[in-house]
Image (tube, rainbow, N blue to C red; front, top):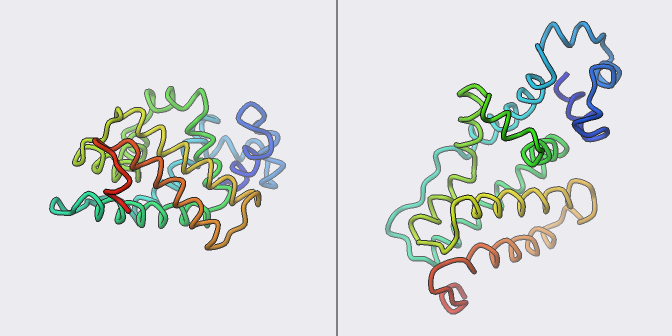
Length: 197
């Protein structure tokens, strides 16, 4: 049922995700959907949580050692970002659903009204790894702008690969890594390419 919801969301968008469309995609009755989920909001939360649980099981709690040089920290950060990026690419449309949902107008409301479980899935997501770097190295960017960059940049490039606009090749991943890296380090204090090249 969650897979059908993700497929329907991808096809129709949030407004077009109706129990009728979902029942058709899942091959079940609308009544069965309501036996499992009280509302469409509950269903969307469950879809979001499923991928973030997998993500947090794999990457949650990662911290960088305090004694790393700026250059080493950036290299480790980019290696990790690319591992996470490939995780999202491999998850396909489930990832696209999570990024679309996170950027939707209703996501903040869902966060505000949500259970501790949903808030934890959001707050302990991979963004916190990069927040740790932002704080340790005094990046010249606010936490909100930093989170927005990480989420938008990751979601945009994952979408390009999952939808076939960019090929799923090492060459594409290297190209994306370079673009992400340039955006990340250019906000560091006293930024100079000499520090990272």
